Image 1: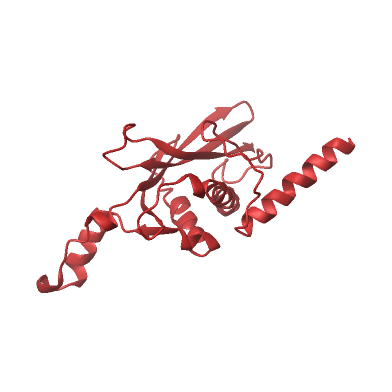
Image 2: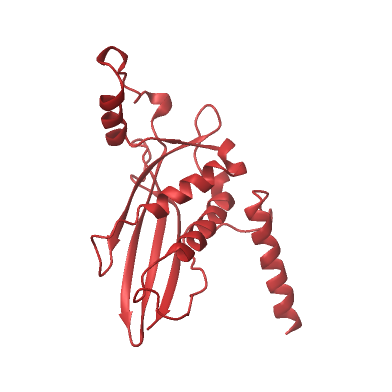
Length: 201
């Protein structure tokens, strides 16, 4: 029991430091495994749907995980990794539900944390083109897709749900996919993590 308490204390210490964007220097980053936050067992919430609590918990865990892995990401000449936001692919029993808010909040948390000096987000080219067409005159339109601004990674994810006896289980997967066409391993997943939640009915 004493050993369990010491282990828990060490884990909490690492987590607190990670949220402060200081990190735990002795922590080992395992890129070959998808980790999972503890399952949330509680009463029914809209028949087991994801809500604001799951949004905050999930993005906090992903923020900590990316901070711990930042030194393993490729960077540009200015020392920052360039990331473009893609979409959350909904593969649940409610495939029409838009879950991109999970990526949007994760981006906001990354941009307001200490890690913002090591990464930069650029607008998705499709959205950027549409935005320029809306707000700029023809003479001011410019192609931003120069070598120095091409994204290194795409931040994307998938959401799954499984009906179980007496409840429903959800799991959200997040990943950074390498967009470098010269990478010997095309479309390599450089970082991945997940968050799982179980709802009782």
